[in-house]
Image (cartoon, rainbow, N blue to C red):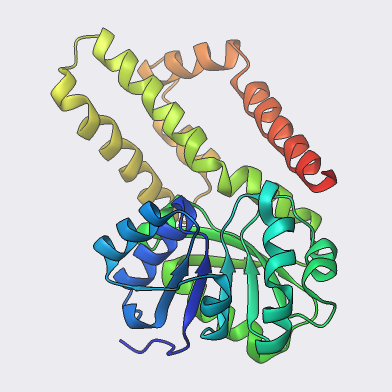
Length: 272
């Protein structure tokens, strides 16, 4: 398959970098064009062992060799990292892609330089298997640069360019945190199934295949999920009985409160 040939650097080698690198290589990106820098040598050795990518001696070397630079460090240390790399970024002028939740574009511009080309991105864990839903926001970059960023991130899933930066906080809650919420839902189904007698060895495949089948059906159906739910819910039937219990316990309100709390946390990170 045809892929871009620009070198990609990751500043930070944690989970998000790991998942993106895995997804990129799985999609055909040249592993020789991926370089990673991290202060934690154990993380670097693990990435080298798993993916046979290039390791940089420091952030400056990684940036100097890259056209695209992913900032894959925790939001709490991003100001310090940006202060360290600002001069190198201004010298080599790569496209910066920040993966830090809550950190605003204006802050990134102040830390890295007003003329720095910056994109904020929020992928999720499914990038590792090419199925991420990634929200993107940028201001001062060209159409060609946006196309390059899109081309790379499309290799790990579906992208959505946002017109308002505040919407990226919502994407963080829904898509970034979504896998964790869905995994909790699956855990609850598994535990309930085991209590009803489903063998522990069988419960993983049983529930995961059910969730997978329902998701694929929804993605390929001409109907929305509400209609699909209604189609499978016969009046006074088994599914209707289960759903009634969930609705009586106000499941919709619980999800609303959970996402609202996550949204507040994004705002708190931005203010720090």
